[in-house]
Image (cartoon, rainbow, N blue to C red; front, side, top):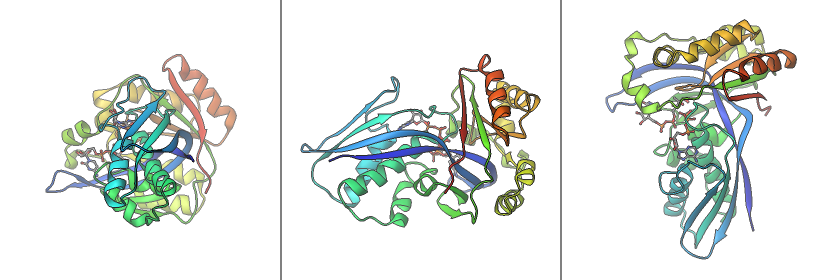
Length: 285
Ligand SMILES: C[C@](O)(CO)[C@H](O)COP(=O)(O)OP(=O)(O)OC[C@H]1O[C@@H](n2ccc(N)nc2=O)[C@H](O)[C@@H]1O
Ligand SMILES: Nc1ncnc2c1ncn2[C@@H]1O[C@H](COP(=O)(O)OP(=O)(O)OP(=O)(O)O)[C@@H](O)[C@H]1O
């Protein structure tokens, strides 16, 4: 018996940091979308009480530091099942990229364990249990396109998927620590994208309006530390992107294009500059 789950990456088309809370976390307002770049997880039951993670990624932890391990432990504690789990992770999403790879793996694990051991857990319980592992997990559990608020735990699906377009992802060869970015920003100095207008554009299926309202409060800070983020964004526009925005806390920059030929042109033009370049579609749902 085995269960296979896909774990799609996410992009933040809009990310507004509203304020810092007493506990140090930040209230966010975001538009998030799943894209057609995914890790693949295979779950098998084990007789022994063990969690074994095997992966094609040479540098990811396979112990408790891995989000997959933590998600299995949370499932075991809240929905006791017999034996252990063997997980095979095929890692395709770049790590520490702002693409939510670890969160999506955890979400796939909640879904996979639920199916493998027939635990009948409710989606809203999984969302609540997932938050201490990562604030992007509730969105990853649902996927598609959503307005995401609170710390990341309030997920409201949009009435329409994203207008169909091509997405070019370019990750410079640096890793950005999300806790570090949040600890360094001063909320009073941040720009604030208009998330309401972005949401409206998507729900009106208005591609042009959507591209006008992409924005990320964290972009200026990450770009000030890593100027390569700004350089990539400028080149994407120069090579014909309709819009370009940093995803999450970075450093991946996302370009949107209506035409496939243009997306390929941007990707090919940037390949000499960055090793990790992808052309994908948003997920229709
Ligand atoms: C920036 C985003 O990528 C947007 O999608 C996510 O909010 C970050 O999600 P993530 O990588 O899963 O990060 P988490 O592991 O949840 O949080 C890492 C750290 O970021 C800070 N953090 C995160 C979420 C939030 N709403 N406020 C915060 O201040 C906290 O210091 C936290 O310890
Ligand atoms: N299954 C996993 N996949 C990727 N990273 C993981 C995983 N488990 C733990 N990690 C750790 O989490 C850190 C961040 O990885 P991840 O790829 O999730 O970041 P991210 O793309 O920046 O996410 P976000 O957009 O949510 O901030 C890495 O340092 C990595 O070692």
